[in-house]
Length: 469
Image (cartoon, rainbow, N blue to C red):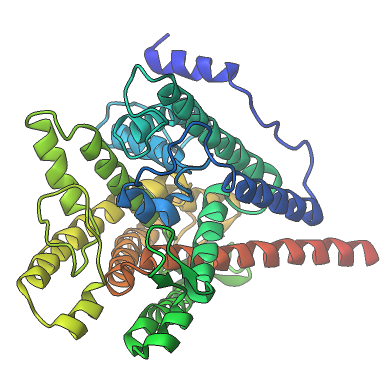
């Protein structure tokens, strides 16, 4: 028995959500989804025991909250980060042929999921330690391995992410959609709501400073540029909705003279998963950069990667530094300050960030298509089992694969590039106030939730009409 088989066997000792023995009714799916969402929001409001709330929180944690469905200082401090990173690591291992698993077969996918679960649990504890050990979160009494509260905080953060792991498993089997997607959409939606409608409040550190949401600050200052995030959110929403409707129809028939039809291949064939995986990878690079900052050579390399994978802003002039000072967005900075040396640095960093994001999205898009049973070979096999064929060609899976090869691989690449550019462009416009990536993900997630709900209702209607006939 190999090492992989040993880990797969070890996963059997972990608690598992039992698969439903029969189809779950739509009302129960909706109930489980609501329950999971309520639990998520409750966890987001339970503060960590032993955390020094007076110590400053590193800005990079705050940036990643919307992308990782996390809330710094609470049970969901790490959010879905360990879950996503486990998937990323295994996909990289598969690409480098370190793991020899046939993800095209049911047995291979089962092994992959078992390994992902084991690795996710391990990463929950590792990332929990990184958050505390790197100084991003400080326990009462100061940071240090000798402080017992360091380990107490680590365990709490790990338990929070493990709960999210099992909530995701519950939703995938008894709920609607994916728990990872649901938590991201919930976090982003809540953040945008408060950033827009937050009433005026006084800063706890400086009572002379009064802050509030976008609408309040726009009315009090009279600066129309403050409305730019809302306008950008609307534009991104319209672009994503339009792109969701774009598709290529491949003609198919049932037999030689059977009923004709079309197999649609969407422009966003890869959905928004490449962006989720890429941004989670970038965030973890910055976490590791902070953790190994004092290690010679390794710290310098990780510091550079942290800079290259950081969303730039006009106020970020610390070019090679893992912790950004933050600032207004690139577009707003051009309007207010013009083209300065700091703006040049930010634009250069933005170009590097965009190139790396596009490359990462293409790689993860390809992996996602393979893992999601959406590859050319998988789709051809599905059409063949359904008795479908391409009109004008003989009934042969190889013929179907050859035709699909003209569409699926190019659309996978183009769709991955599109979501990368849209995500980065939104972040350049909305940086400092809202997350373009978060809005992109939320729109795509909500759109797919709508499709799943509509599909469930259509199936219920078909069953009802079948009983009536």
